[in-house]
Length: 58
Length: 404
Image (spheres, rainbow over the protein chains, first blue to last red):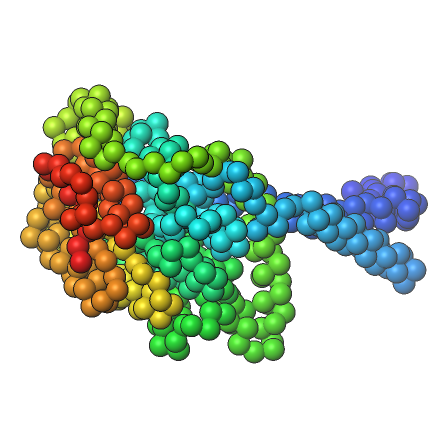
């Protein structure tokens, strides 16, 4: 009888089910990291910083 | 997903959000407020969009002897290129006038109107403001929306909207122009706090803008220079101009137009072959900039602030070369003069007749060595209520440019 090939998704789901605490930690850290990254980008990246003068006559 | 697991995931998300909020809150507590200041340091000459957009910072760092100056890219000229910039002349010797430069590239009369509207909620030192204008701001089509949006400041517009001295006519004009320049309705309504629904937007946008400015002001604080203190000296304009002329002759050796060597060899000379008559269609008439300037001066009238409009010339030989005739330019200068003349309290330092004066500009549009000295003399006289007639000496080829 041929063995059914495991998909990546199936392995991932199995692992999550087997390690609920780790899965929850990953979700929590991901959310925190994403929000902090947005905050850091908006506040400290220099986005919207000084404009350079361009010799637009050229 | 099983309900129990879903429940756990939601708790994990909530903990993640809480951690992020704690980090943001801790950062907020650590960042100095916009108005935090060090009175021994002069931030007036720092060229920065964050500084220019923070009315709190600008007001907190002005003193009784400060002079508010609004302008744009001319404030970016480094002292290493032109040693006569305000940071060197007023920033190193105490002449009793300490310019506070506000504005950067692409800031034009509409932006300046909003900035002054925000700043004039508090008392402006001397009750005076200097506005530097240049012909490049009056090109056909006006400022493109992308450049304006890059420089639009939610905080400044919010301050402008809360200034009780501003009439509905000026408010409506500014709002209409902001819509034309592509500022979205949600942002405008949030700044105006015009209805309860906008209150959430107001809170969020104000918080984010405050945090962004506080973060970026760190750079500004690191670029301040020691405040020039001690006995107030009288500037020797003759000596300063002689030094400027000598410096100019050292810095401009490769061309007849008087442009700085680095600018000439790197920027201008390589571009010249394809620029002959390239802008022959320019008229300086199809732009809202004149009306924006009029609105700026109307705001000065309303708030009781005395303005000095400094007209920065452009480089005559270059503009002839690209096909914008001296007559076209003269008409535009005249139109600016007419707008200023319609406001009795407004004064004018008109340098438009210096287009062909070598070394007056260091590139095609920005004050150079002698240009800055003459402009600074006009600004100094304006700040101290001097008139050219009161000066103790005259110089051939040097005028302060201040007209009645």
